[in-house]
Figure 1 (tube, rainbow, N blue to C red):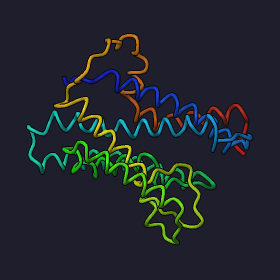
Figure 2 (figure 1 turned 90 degrees about the vertical axis):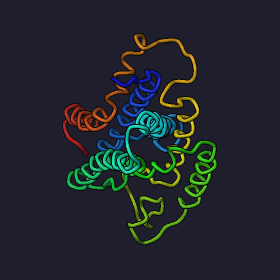
Figure 3 (figure 1 turned 90 degrees about the horizontal axis):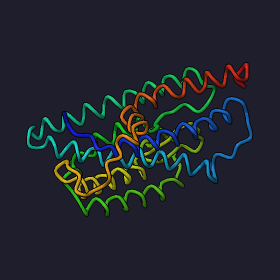
Length: 243
């Protein structure tokens, strides 16, 4: 059995908790009209911090996986492995697109975090062997993203890149620019601190103490997929109706 690093799972578990907390307030705002400021202050920080942590850990985890299998598979097999993994997660994103289009009045998710993570896994393969260069590339990707966010074109084809139509509203949006920069930073950290798929530093063994967080981290995709329907159902039951 391949060794999992409890600190990575625990950190992902913390991000899951932050994400659920943020979505509780977001759903109250969206479905009940509760007056909540989601775009500044602590709630905005919680939402962005959880997303950034997830995305950063994608890069870290990819390097560990790559280091452990690169001598066992051919280049073609390695690419196919990450392409299939990315496609699977991207497909979950497409399902969310369909569900939000059918059941929400507005805010269809066209390129949310699962779309982004799935596509990023496919695109990350050429960068997994790089180290310091990934830091420079990450800075460039983030800078380009900051520039593109103020641009608008009347086409939906550029949405994944960070260029939105003039009239665009979605509940979840993580374009490649700037967010792929966080993946590249994760790849750099993974290659630096987990070379050859092994931890290159010493930390206390807190696996038992952090077991709940580790569990959440190990099951992050499942939790992501089911937590929103559960939250919406609870809000519906508590309020009697969704506004």
